[in-house]
Image (cartoon, rainbow, N blue to C red; front, side):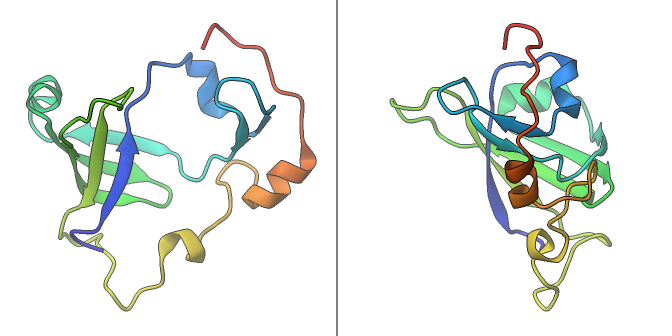
Length: 135
């Protein structure tokens, strides 16, 4: 829905191999928990992405299997206890925007685009966690 804000936390770079991982990372390991690939696609910056990141306002277009259209990332003011930058992900008012009458996309389309499973089904399957890179 246009103007709806979601928290987006910036983390360190991860190896590209992680981008296709779906499963459960054991508790106690970095990033422990269940991981689903909810959406997949590409993005195109509007304007200079480096300048947008530097000033704390990045405009871009998503070309995903679920999320599409224009979006904004706006850096929030940091707090002393924050380990990473926090951003707000905001949907622009465009032809891809959902209306207030549309169901929440997370509830309407909860399945992984990779496996077609729910987060619960992924957690119950418990495939072994691959040791990839240093992240």
